[in-house]
Length: 280
Image (cartoon, rainbow, N blue to C red; front, top):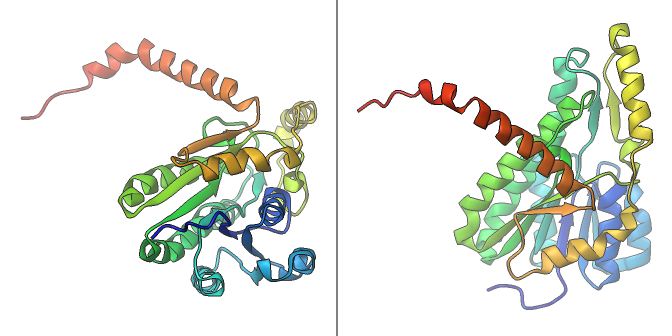
């Protein structure tokens, strides 16, 4: 039976900084309960000290699938249910496609993609048994568009989006919702050294990257503390959206990208159709 209590129980990865920290505290402030996880559990002590028994903290490295299963089960046992399972942990690899090593790319995908999958797979049996639940994946507007120099990060978010869209269709009949949250540019710690890893630079890309970084500096960034109420409206909706933009700039950027893609596909449609032979 679906939880009739207005106070939700959240499970949040990457809750020690950025959106994860802001949303965990906002949920607690409105009376919800939160299982806050991070690689360094001591970084969550301020939440525990302030909110006491309404927050449960745990060490979780999402790249460790066995640990993810154990911590999700522990969280469910602790509060007796999980209403919202939010995959927020992630970081960006900075480097051109040529610069980044295979090991760099694999390590980022282990966190951004496979870490999320581990949490989802751990949570699904519990949510099915409950008969309800809401899986929330924190993506980015870069799950639809791309930028140079962080192309592999964009790729991880495109994969993240595809996984969640397929998941939504697969688990709808179990009463479990899926929402992909797509923030635009915000002034979070995402640009800090804790959230960025840099590929070994090649001199040939030096000028290009310098121009790119100068462009980023001029980008308008939103206040992340302005986001919780909008997020809660989407999460609390009777029919929550599969995709949910956060910010005022996303839609115009994504619309422009899709209009350009459609125009190009239309331009080449005759050639594309000529390659189709129906096999009976």
